[in-house]
Length: 173
Image 1: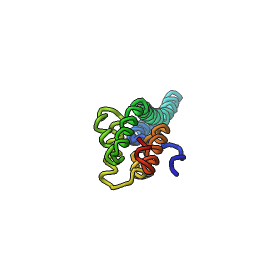
Image 2: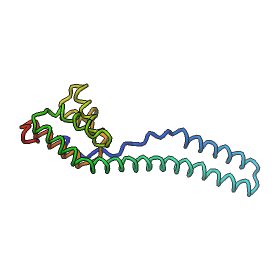
Image 3: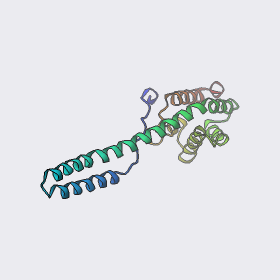
Image 4: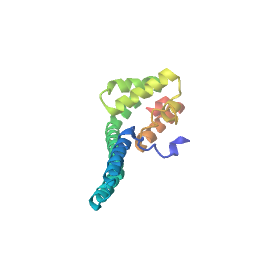
């Protein structure tokens, strides 16, 4: 199933394209004005402004995308550091006979100040509000809570928990 698929990549940045386009337009207008004079110095200024019209907006856009990727990577590292504790708590609840639909929000509530706690709470919310099975609430490509989590460790472990809970809740715990 989807378990063997590659994890989702870091989502593209929501950076607006307006700022780089505005910078490019400004430099293009300045280059056109500088080129009107026709002397060597003015043509050199126009060439430099044209180069700026290409490089500055591109640099701005790439820097904003890279910044988003760094923030997302830090979030994933934090989730992976907190995951063993959350997985232990989830396993204890399931071993006590609590269904996954109730165990995820319970653990999410106990770890509410952590990245993994927020993820578990959203998984529980997805199951409660949409009526999705644990498998779909976690791994569905459109609705699954893990669709934007790029951690293979978390995906693989939760896939094992869901598969175990479907067979025998005692084994899953």
